[in-house]
Image (cartoon, rainbow, N blue to C red; front, top):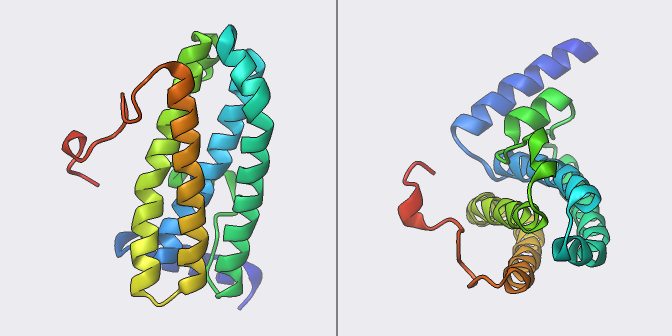
Length: 181
């Protein structure tokens, strides 16, 4: 097969994997969410004002570094196991479940920060599903990596919610919110 034929076969397999979710397919969503979230963190750290700008001045670089390293780790785990990864802007846009809005940079700093918290929370849905699938598929190194990511995200939510003066789960997803996932 030539390069184009290999890529078309990859796209076909990816489509199948997303309709009958696999750990790799769910991890593709996580990878895409990490990329988009990193862009949103960068934007908020540049435009947030007020006390949120101080919080982000302290946290944004840490978040970006962690998410960048996690992005690389997950890509390597998938490729090392013969799985495909998102590689084009179109795929990242298709697989992310985080919402983007260029006007959000004009929101109050606390709202920009809370939007990042809600994005962390959205990522939990995909991570927990991927952990279950990785365990079902006997893929312990992926499950272990995702468990570490899950613990890190939960800590970032706690610290951010505390800064915002919110209860831990205030304004975040609950199972009663959406039965479609």
